[in-house]
Image (cartoon, rainbow, N blue to C red):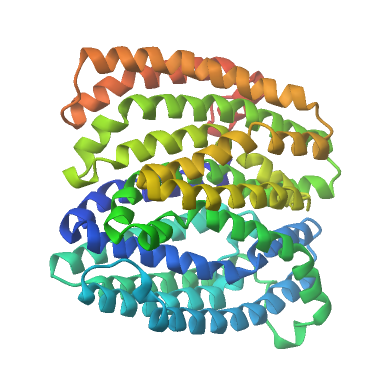
Length: 495
């Protein structure tokens, strides 16, 4: 509960920053320059897949060894991972520089000065990614020690400091290269703070070259090779849209698409705030052979997740247009349609995120790879077909169609096989609570939207509140007594 609450707090900070910063930077830089900035991050995202799935392996084995306080094994895992990440960091740095020098000009960027500026900023971001890899085993492993709250706190501090510095730089007329430099500096400071915390909180943990061995590296790669495939699939699903739009259409289209897409991705991150802390917890439960508890986690995840994700989709469908018109400049208004389409895919995908955590925790994540491989192939094919025809809406459809199909059929079927649960029960639970959410949210939202035309933040919040209140009231009723008592106990309101 502590980890989940702090994770939500961290993502609330991120969401607030995005909500305030995106309209600011997009209005100052314009769609083309802002589009280049978005393309830079998605390009760096491609190189982040050189993680090779090792971060998942770290979480798996550190949390597993922590169950029995096997610190010599933990030290071998961290020390071996440090060497592997040092090699990865060097490869990433060289790869980003080669891409920036020889391939960046292939993006459809009209202004030659933007090409040069973007290239140099990308080189700096390559340094940021390489340093992050090198420092990761000891500076970003709080979650593996079941202290996701510490990780979220450090990340939130990094984002606040970084954003304030970036706003100051934009106000004083600095460009993309300076913003990239701030990102590098803030990331290094955060990882160093993580290392200091680990040294104090876990004094038994230490690094030594003598602890590096081949057996541990084979152990890590036996788990990470599947995680690597999953990471590539997720990269294609969630971090390639603006990259592809920059190649197929223009940097301006990438800039217009991004605000709505990032907001929808933020909702995924909010659910991940529950899922990420669950991975080491599930690994702990598996070590104790508590299979029934793991089944209950998934069943409740589908139930609560379906209700909330379909409620969110219903609200986005009704309020996306007025929201974007208040939030962004006129040239970004088409981003509202992107939000509507992506919210439909999210309604099917979000309830299954806790399933991902379970599969990672019990070392059955090969099933995630099966689904993600099919999803990625469908997304790329649909993007190449639909984007030239429908632009940014075609890209949104390329994301939503595979999600709606696969996460209502194939994924729950595989989970039913892994956890020995009836597929019909999983499917009917998702459908039943999804429909309930739509019945609660959509009529109230449409009525409020027709009665009061949102022209500013106050009136928009006023029209959203009735549907939000109804969602919460009905949601409280569907929460099971056991979970309600746990939340009350955590908040100090009794057992």
